[in-house]
Length: 206
Image (cartoon, rainbow, N blue to C red; front, top):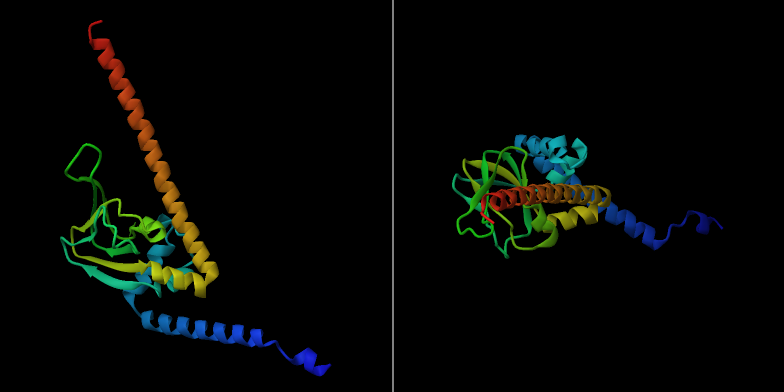
């Protein structure tokens, strides 16, 4: 009777031991970033409303503990449009300026689509689907950044499922917003082309 009441199944011990290992690993990672101004800045930027990550500051600190610091000297291309091999990471810009360029239809030279700074997140689509990069990102000043790889994302999801799920939902929301913006631009483009065609038809002799 007492044995049944107080003896835990072997699986329960294994789960407890596994959680202890995960907690210790998290503590080690957090200690490595403790006191780092860059790590704290990264957490603040991830938790900011503009990032659309919907993370609390404490959750953002845990995500940052899976990131790697990186510096890109001015002129460095760290994401290349069409690249099929280096699609397993996203970049959080801590400070500096990045130019985003893309080759549009019927053009051979890239067009600047955005100039981004601190708090910008780049490459999140690649970390999800692994498809070729859709734009080129170039450091137009010295850039400090934090890199988050697909491997780190998998570790985050495994070790901290709730935070991993929240992070993935946030990434999905960012991508959805980008698709909505693109759809709005396509609608505007269609309206402009229709207006131009109507004007051409009006001016052309019948």
